[in-house]
Picture 1 (cartoon, rainbow, N blue to C red):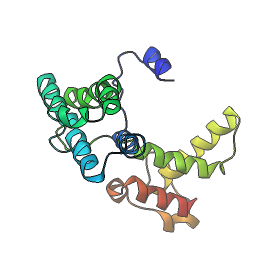
Picture 2 (spheres, helix red, strand yellow):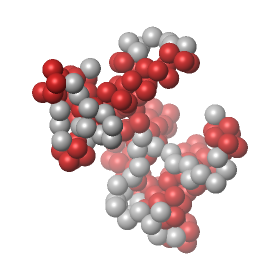
Picture 3 (tube, helix red, strand yellow):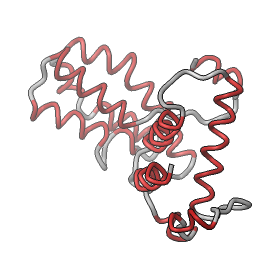
Length: 188
């Protein structure tokens, strides 16, 4: 799928979810390598922390930060090999470079939690059953249409009998994705 996305959208900036990267690395350190909790947390912080590798300001800084804890990971040959050959290039290409390209100084690392949240809403809408493509498209359209009705987005409006579900667009925009999903699930 990654190759298909790259081929279809060659100029797009691709990102990897840092939550999943963290979870995968933590699992690898804990279950495959057997790194103790304290050292595992240090390694995670060296990579994902405020001053970690993912937040490097340029390629020189990235190299410096990624080698600053080399002695620590070299104690675990499998980890050192995996970090050098797989993990480091992936975080450089799909986390650090996009952050620098977009001049992202927010301190927040990108996750796909919002996409997973709306994916859950869609699965609830289709009752977790496979759908034919036309049926799925119609249900997704209806779901987006209904979600827009709740906060009066564009041409969408709730009917009078359902008006008690209405939220102003201003309040809707202040809600987190989880809060929006909860509101929609109550409505739907």
